[in-house]
Image 1 (cartoon, rainbow, N blue to C red):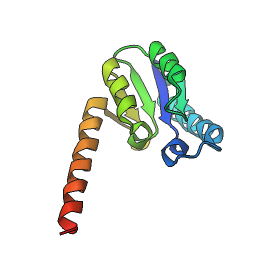
Image 2: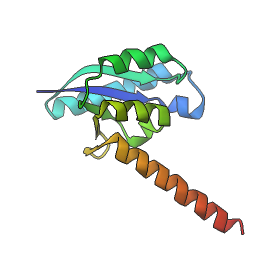
Image 3: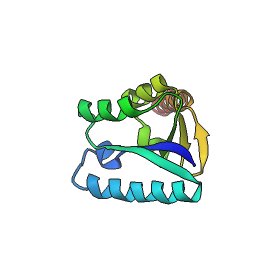
Image 4: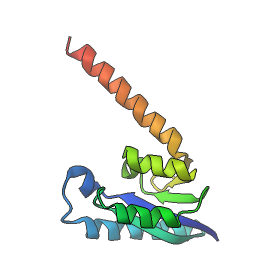
Amino acid sequence: MKNVTFFTLLPETILGRTRNSAKEFFEYCTMADIFAESNNLNIVNGCGISNLGDVNMRKKYFSRLKRRSTVLIISPVHVANPVILNLFIGKDVTFRVIEGDYLIKPKNLKEFFLEELKSSTEESAVNSM
């Protein structure tokens, strides 16, 4: 069994609501557990951030995260925050995306997000002319 860790930025956080974050985290942990079991993976650490201002939670999770480890995420949207992505880039981890079952490096994901932002900004400028 390969050891992995699990991370999610809760969508409630993205939308600015935190009332149901515990329920969502439980659902995501269940998804991750089922995925890990079916792929012979051992989840050794997990974190669901519902408040990006909670520095202690980020420190606790990232201090336990080993360099070059594999991190399970539900989808790229669940890590779509520059601060979070930079912390993962610093650890040189590899994301294993549950929805689609593929691997991606945080640096490549950040570049993809920046390219999408650039192209959507350019498209918006063209449409407003």
